[in-house]
Image 1 (cartoon, rainbow, N blue to C red):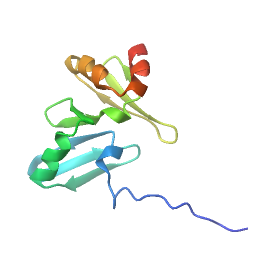
Image 2 (image 1 turned 90 degrees about the vertical axis):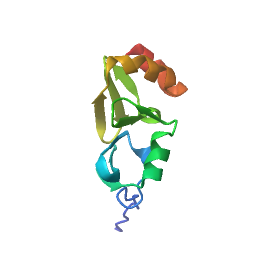
Image 3 (image 1 turned 45 degrees about the vertical axis):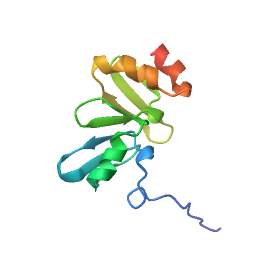
Image 4 (image 1 turned 45 degrees about the horizontal axis):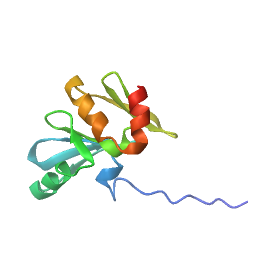
Length: 117
C-alpha cells in the first residue's frame, strides 16, 4: 500500500485575496483576510490596499470591512453566508441598509439563492 499525499495550496504562503470571504482593513497597512478555514493578517502597502478595496469583487459593508461578492452563497435576514462543503458555513452580519445593494451586485449564480432567503 502506498501513501500519496495530496498537494494542498498553502494559503499562508500564497494568499489570493479573491479566495477570502471577506477582509478587514486595520491600521498601519494591516489587512486581515477571513476565508473558509483561516484568518490571515498581512501587511500591505497603501497602493496594494487601495487597489484591493477598489476591486469590484469586494463590497464595503462597514468602515473597515469588505465582503467578496463572489463567495456569498446566501442571505438570511441581515447575515451573509459563505458555504463550503468541507468546512461548513461562515457568516458575517451586514447592516440592513447594505443588503439591497449587495443583492443587486451578487453574481448571477447567487441571485436566485439570495432572493429566496
